[in-house]
Length: 98
Image 1: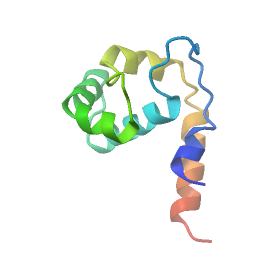
Image 2: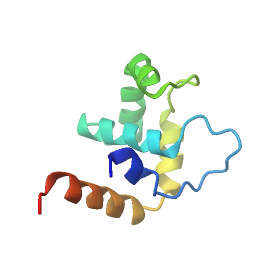
Image 3: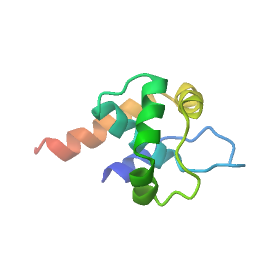
Image 4: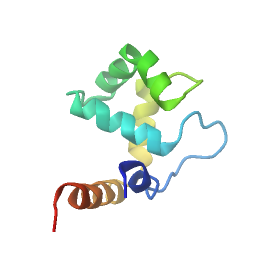
């Protein structure tokens, strides 16, 4: 299972109305930001804005990137027991050969 498939298992609690990007893409953006050393909502928002052209190209976004307020709002409503569990399961199967 690849990372996108794993992230698709995380339930998206947002309303379907007005969504500009999938939860999977958003979570990958957050993983990229954290790996780049940005841990605060504002730091994540700055990273997204500073790399907007690349992110839009990579994810095929026509709506730009989420602002730090959107980042905060989404991170506050996702299930933080489910997300790390799925990520850890992916990492275990991806990096540990049994």
